[in-house]
Length: 96
View: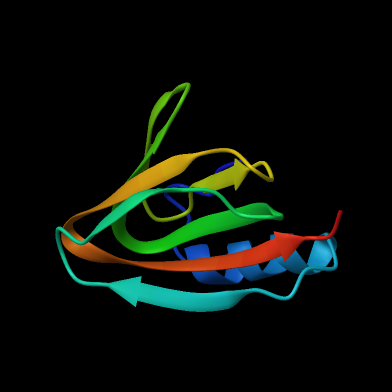
């Protein structure tokens, strides 16, 4: 699911989280921040709200722009590189 091009990607993302009974939290990073390979003990649901970020996974790279959603399954290894404009995302843990 993507809300790319939506004039208010944050409102669209919050509505999507609410529809799934998830409570998101926001985080931001400056340009070029890198996250090393890691995994989470939960399913992660993430929307890019501002800027951009590329998630690196075993299945390839996923480039997110405002309004894009990425679901990362529990235990799936991933890394990330923040884009040139920095990034703000909303994410939540999906209950098992």
